[in-house]
Amino acid sequence: MATGKKIKFWELVLMNVSAIYGIRWIARSTADSFGLGLAGIPSWVIFMFLCFVPQALMCAELAAAYTSDGSLGEWVKIAFGTKYGFLISWLNWTAKLFWFASFLTFMSINLSYMVGNPSLADSKIFVLILSLAVIWVLSILSMKGMTFGKLFTNVGSLGSTIPTIFLIGMAFLAVAVLKKAPSASVYTVASMTPKLNGNSLVAISGIIFAYTGAEISATYVTEMENPKKNFPKAIITAAILICVLYVCGSVAITSLLPTSEIQASTGILDSLTRACELLGIPYLFVQIVAAGITLSVIGALILYIGFPIKILFGNAEKGVFPEKFTKNNEHGIPEKAIILQAVIISVLLAAVALLPGVDVIYNVLVTMTALTSLFPYVLLYLAYIRIKKQKKDDPNLYQMTKSKNLGVAIGWMELIVCVLSIAASAFPVMGSFKDNMIYEIEMIGGGLLVLLSGIYIWKRSGLKNKVTPIE
Image (cartoon, rainbow, N blue to C red; front, side, top):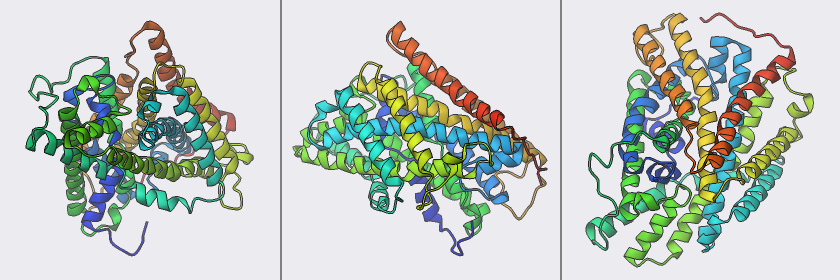
């Protein structure tokens, strides 16, 4: 990945912040339902340094040795062969299907606040119809090329950080400085200690998922000046900045609303509404923030609507998929695959609409996203362990640690945490037996369907797994 221009320290730091940080995780982690409550505050710090930092450094070591587009597939293919390279691309794409559905739900909720009618956020029909309309419009437009999407992605890149800064500043001003109201929460060691229940386990898996994605920026390790010194320094700096945003954002939202009143889907805008009420700021401010978050969601949808498709259908071994799904149109887009993706997302949205309430639907979609998105990282950590054991050390390349044994041990630690978080995602957390049955069918059944369908597609193709020696 040679561009002729070195990546500067702060460019890599901000790249990681942009790629990893997401404002919606603040409400998700601090809500009592599907969340950790006040225990979400220290959890962001713990799992940042337990998960994100080691993952980023491991990916940087792999990227220094082998080129990659950030999709993980190249590294897994080197370690285990073409079959597993395809499988990780399949897992990445299917995880994005759940991600699309959760993001569309989140966008619909923000849009209801943007137009000044928050009650629409509680309407399953409104959220479903709007989500279906947006995914089909964007899918059809993507077939013509996505040059128009630059406007949304450029504006949307600020859709998480700026609202968070507003939230932190307004909460501090209203509660701590002007004392317009007492803090809605009391912060003690006991109140911030995680409770070992289903909600906590599911929330922790969500936090671990929120910290994935370091492989994208890790691919730039070879383009930094003095990467052995600057890359880990940049990762630690980015980790601290992201932690500050999550921790201060969590304190802000819980100082404005008690954790029992925070909903994962609307908590950010509800807390901003509360801050505006205390400070005498017109509701128009909340509408503007909701518009910014909506733009950021649309930008993310535009960015990812075609990328995983191209990775999977464009790079798959010939014969894995029917030619009609791999054939590009005049704009270089596999439009039949785009249509297939929109159909599957539509079915998924309709299926989760059976659950009670929009907030429950949103939480389930986010949890399903976390569960399926962590599958590829199981293969990534296994690949790192195998490559670390077998590859000859090159002192000229970046390495997380010079000790093979220590590197392998860190790989096993990350693998165990990842597997445990996948298992935690499927823990029953619904209020009734019937709802738990639907939840478990969607969680466990959905996860197994994703895995087994990928294995079946490869087996049906008749292709053999090609493995090249690790050098």
